[in-house]
Image (cartoon, rainbow, N blue to C red; front, top):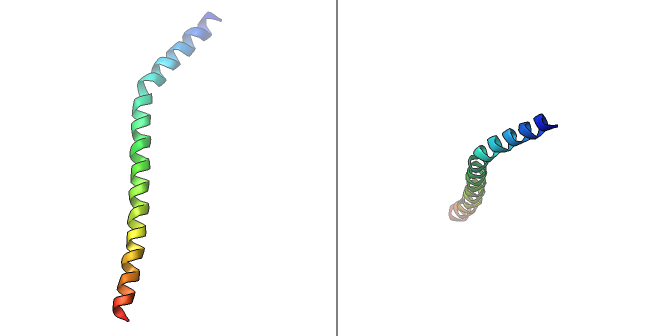
Length: 55
């Protein structure tokens, strides 16, 4: 039982070390997704404006 507690403490320490990195990566990925969605929306608007100019 004591070995299990030690193993869990080690796993907890390791996860605690990498948790800030994982959180930062998640924030960066979410920001990239938002930027890509905004760029796609802006591209659709620009295409609509170009279609109006061509008419």
